[in-house]
Amino acid sequence: MMKLVLKKIILLSLFVASFVACSSAPKLSENPAPESDYTEKDVHDSEVKRIYEMLEKSPVQALWRAKILGDENLCRECAEYVRDVCAAHVEQDDRLEAYTMYSSLVAAGYGDLAQEIMSAQKMNVLYFDGVPGITTKAQPSLAHISDYIQGTVTVWVDLGIKVKRGMGFADRVIGSGFFIDPRGYIITNHHVIEEIVSPKNPGYGKVFIKMAENSDLRIPVRVVGYDSVHDLALLKTEAEVPYTFNLGSSSELHVGDKIYAIGSPLGLERTLTSGVVSATDRKLFSTGSVIQIDAAINSGNSGGPFIDENGRVQGIVFAGILQYNGLNFAIPVEYLKQDLPILFHGGKRRFPWIGAYGRTARAGRTSYGLEVQYFMPGSAMARVGMRVGDVITSLDGKKISTLEEMQDVLRGHVPGKIIGCEYIRDGEKKDCLLYLSERPENPGYTIYQNDTIEHSFVPLFGMEMTPSSTTNSRTFTITRVIPGSAADENGFSENDPVTVGRIQFDDAKTVMLVPLTTKNRRKGYLDMNVALQTYLDSPYYF
Image (cartoon, rainbow, N blue to C red; front, side, top):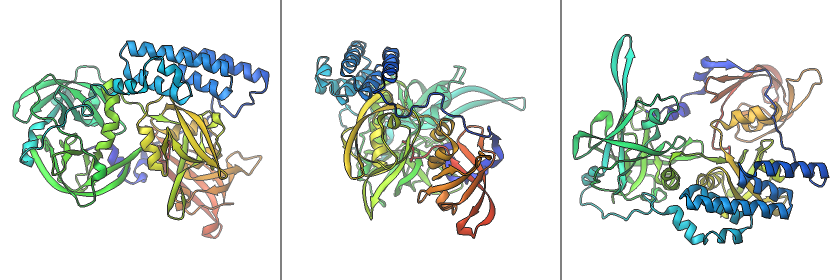
């Protein structure tokens, strides 16, 4: 079963035994980027030099930096360079890079240069041309639910021989998958083929499939692209495809709707189970929600489809928990649809971020945007002059009312792109351009490394602090506590004194442990020793 889900469900305290001590204070950013006064000639000239230096290596970022600088001649020069590079990517049939640069030109206000390459409509057609599951012709519904089994496969990952206690054992992973295109494209989970694409893999592993109609024959397949965040992978075989599934829309699902899961639990091929949708918004991913189902799921089901009564794929099974019968999860098919053009491009799917943290802004029961509660030094928001308290209402031309909608928009993009942003500050509407960097594996750890303790504790624990001693750099006073945060749930409030002890992390830098000494106002100002723990990734980072 998938390790990610277990990490999200098991209590954080189980990680304490594996923690290792870190340095007594976080490192400051090697290149912090506070708001610069570009009216000063030396600052302006230094920035122009940096832009020229990054133009060849990162032309879109150079264009964005030029837009912030406000030098129109430089902006035009950078935009023309991006146009030329974009045209070269079109010639090389590198569609993802071409589409990213084309969209960035349009967002930056240089649609005229983009039109010199091709029209927006043609670029959109080029980007999606041939993408399996998106441009695939819809298949007719089959007579019986059991007929859909023919479109599924068992995925075998052969990793050779594993030696344990002097004995050799076959080292293999068994999962499930399903066809989405008659050319032989198959969907499964990333964790099924993880060892094959891992940089640590020595290269001797192989991936095969067994067709439902002939389970004795092992057919080789190759990995086209994979998404480790949403646990998806796209495979390709040259074998003849018996049936291709239609992709549905899990937004149409409701709690209680009947569904069917198809896969190879414990290697038992052609297994079909049924159940209902138990919930649609379980937050087990750092950039989205998953679906909870109660259809029987076991090891080997991973990567198989769950379908509605019309045979449409509404999700991809990715995890169950053996000791909790009926507690199983699936990836919404919308995530797959967003991923497919990028997975089809090949390789590892990278995700964007703008180095910030925030929560849904609400007025009573009404959600009206995403409140920015923190952004990292040197991030896109820091460079464009956004402030804590600004409320994002639109991103890339799409309305933003909640954190979930913000993550939905970001999921549709890749790093290295410029997008437009609209926000509200003190009741006034404003706009800016944001550059999408690559989301780190553990954003909280990156923030900790690049900011001071008092500021990094806002996204990490939901409390902002100010230094309260000139002799002890570890002593602070809490000035703000975010409702619903770890600090709030542990009873901290404004004006509480806090002394930070030795900060620790687990080996993988996924969990952080911070011992604190405090006189908590809610607990009668008694001296208390508290250990706060937090995951270093969550949906609140974006």
